[in-house]
Image 1 (tube, rainbow, N blue to C red):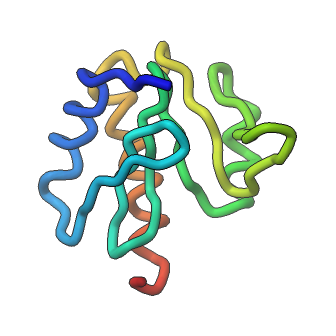
Image 2: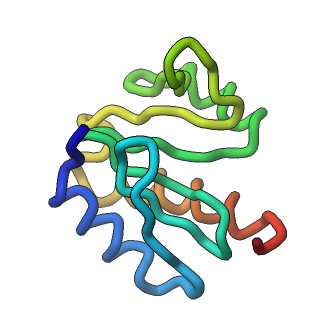
Length: 109
């Protein structure tokens, strides 16, 4: 499964001010980790975002946000954000910050 290189570059730019950011290919996606904790992944033209589970449940109520499922398994605390919601830089920054802030709140690996 391919991922949108342009979206991945935009994510890189937004995360460049943070420390301890690494990239890794996982789940057929290009993923970004903070302190070894997954924060966001670019999967095709969507964003896979890791959130505190209660925040993820709330986010699913928004248009263009759905529960992340891999196969038949629901991923608790993860949501897919549509390409339309991250078209503009402000929309993308909001989701990147949410995922990165949550990952940064976890103990480093």
